[in-house]
Image (cartoon, rainbow, N blue to C red; front, side, top):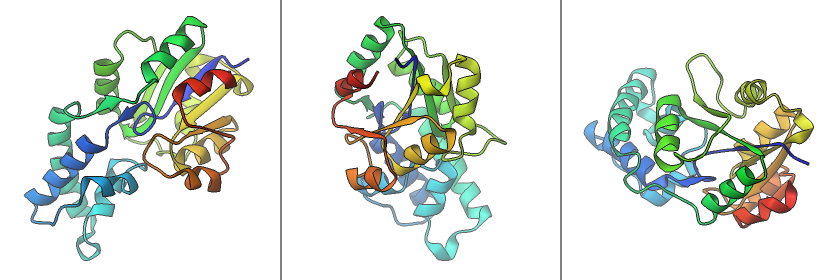
Length: 215
C-alpha cells in the first residue's frame, strides 16, 4: 500500500507549455532573437528555467550574461502570465480527490522555480492539502538530482517503499531511480513514451485514473 504520491508539475499535473513558450518567446524577442514554435518547447523544458533559456538561445550567444538577462525577462513575464493558458490535464482533479479520500498524501516536485510553483499550485489546486510543494531553489540541485525528493520525504515521514513518483519525462524517471522510489511514467505530458521506456519507468500509464491501480 502506497502512502505518498509525488507528482511532477509541468507535463504531469498541468499542461503549462503555452505559457512557458510565450514567456520564453517574449524574452527572446525583447532581446532581438528569433522565437520558436510553441510545440518545440516540449523538448526545451524539463531541467529548470535556466537550462530552458540556455537551450533556446543561439549557440554563438550562449553565455552567462545573455542567459541571465533573458532569464530576468522570462520571469517578469511568466510571473504575470503563468495561468493564462495553463490547465490541469483531464482526470487530474479526479485522481487528486480519490487519493485524498483514501488518505494518501500528495506532494509536488518540480524544476520550476519555487515562487512560480507555489503560485500555480495555489491557483489551480487551492482545495488540496499537499504535504510539500517543492520547486527549484537557490543552492539546491535540480532534478534528476534526488535532493528535492529527499526534502519531501523528510516532511512527509513516509518510507521509500510506500512512495510513488509520477512524471512525464526521462528526467523524472531518473530522479525516482536516484531517490530509490517507484516510478510511474505518464504519456499525456510533454515527452514521448519511448523516452519513458529508455529511462526505465517502473510503470507507464495513459490515464490519470490508472494510477489508482498502482496504490
